[in-house]
Image 1 (cartoon, rainbow, N blue to C red):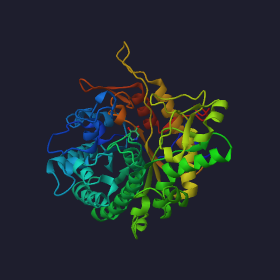
Image 2 (image 1 turned 60 degrees about the vertical axis):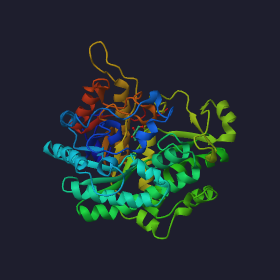
Image 3 (image 1 turned 30 degrees about the horizontal axis):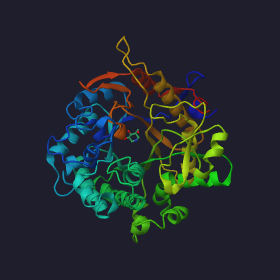
Image 4 (image 1 turned 135 degrees about the vertical axis):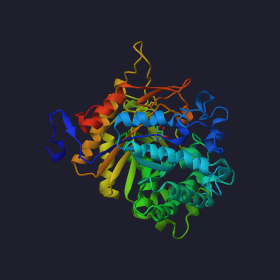
Length: 482
Ligand code: IFM
């Protein structure tokens, strides 16, 4: 038994004394106040207005109205007992057109939030970009063009110089894979393009934006801890057939290695460069010196993990069915020639995402072994379920508690084998706007009644508060790992 397992009783596992517990949100998903105090339109405001882009035609105009309920939400965080709160700054509040001087009223909102956190003894963890690109920049090419990375650097300078005295932990980008591959490749996210060459270029320009932001943050806030948050996965092949093994490698290349390799090894993976060699402009946008910038030293890596992934080569869908898998009807990216599988008997969330916490442990071990010994924060983890307010006026979300318990336990497993995990942020503090799923998927540990904005802490909120208070989690090693 490792030192960190020395707990009060055999069924609980203690975390290191300085382990940081947090909760996470993002601007567009909770703030609302879309045209208040000078905020400009973002690509998500535009995307939400495209017929059929977002379920039920939902949009973020009001969302959780966090902009006007910020004190109430700060109190919810305070009562939860978190040591840190991860929120994102909306670029269109700071630069309504994506260029030029800062909009003071936008900065004032985040100053109030930062001060409110610090007054309550909660460390702010700020994400600078969580997908809400100012629309005028998209009109000029968005992440397909290099200039957007330069514009991002200027925006970061404005935010860092205004809030730097109150913020010690900075995340440049949230999940650049989603911004590039879902935004420009599959069209599931704003701006809704289906152009693989554009997605590859966006992949690079987002990473360049990150690389340009790092020295700016360090200059503006010398004591800052700077990192990036990636959504990473643990891909398994549906069989040992070489075609399926190769398919899993391609899926891994697209989601994981196209980001981890340049950031930590200073180069794009050869197999992926080869795969995307024929698309335009693709990775031909890479210029001399870019990879040196992208691989500048960081202070931590943020990891978002939600679900495992099992895949086969598309040509082997029939064999996968015979083996008992449920095979996805279509390919997310036809060029990858990969089909996702569902493993029979595995529980799923309301997103239809399979639950398998052991994938998180394997992923963390792999990051340590193949990429970096840096501190890791789990900057997002959580689950959507079909919650409801019961006749007693409570939301008893036992399935979410089980999910969180399994995944926090999986984090502990990683710490046990020496992975440098320093903190965990639950996604999410509040039910919120779940992108193309609108308000139909609830990830919060606090229920939000969207018509009125009323907040109601769920059973998982009380459970997480107790986890934070005791700095320990109940044992859950093999649950959800069928
Ligand atoms: O809601 C999102 C978040 O904005 C980014 N990571 C995944 C979450 C759940 O889909």
